[in-house]
Image 1 (cartoon, rainbow, N blue to C red):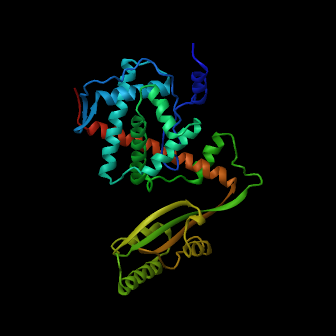
Image 2: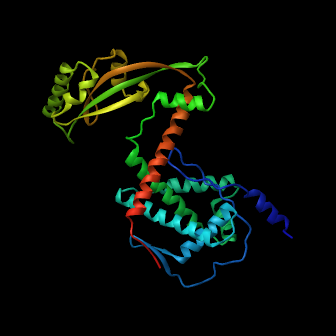
Image 3: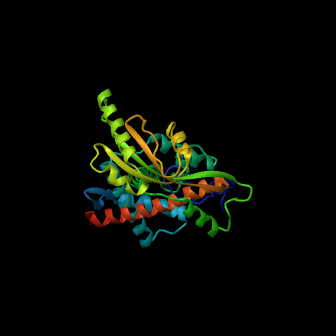
Length: 331
């Protein structure tokens, strides 16, 4: 019959596991830690069970991850759970390999922050969390490895896709309508949504005054030839250092001054005068403006949620491709 201390431990640590995801989407991983069962973590010879592009996974790694999953999901150890643990480790090896290729290293401060948050949610210190995991035969390194892989993967996904994902007001309106809310439109505040084309003339590092002047002149020449948003890309072709980026439903507050003031002062169909930023000269073609009424916080939260969902879809596709291309040897 369990004693009062065991009952207290169960009560303090009874919480469910949550998946880590992209910052600012990373959530604290709250671990369900069971009371110790039969100890399978006895001393034994470690052998390699899987090679992932020559990156080894040992039987000890698999055993630890299976135990961790048993604690967090309340599943009993089984061949299916062992396979789930193995597949998870293979994915994490691929994620860490891709992070290294991209020059991404998980930040220890982020790792420690997540561990501290987990411990606090369970009314424990990090040492106490390690002890509680140990009672279930799980080394806290197993948890740290899991978090570290998630942080690294988050960095990879953000680096690869953050500039490719655009969520517009129409997407937000649709999501709010499907959720049964009008976004707080009645009595809400009005904000502007801008459709812009940004033309950036890159400056080399330590550019001299002559180079800066030539970029400003190129920007002015392009502005003089501008007559509508449809021909911006054609105007920028062949211009040294020039690139065009479409900004859909851009919030004015996301633009730095003086570009923000110039854009808000310009009429639709006009191009702003050139502005000099840290490493480029920029002009903006104003292709459209509209007023959005609603709860700005709710809309921003919905926009982040939609972006997160799209990020997760891209991440799943990328991981699937990495797995298809990987050399995975089972021993």
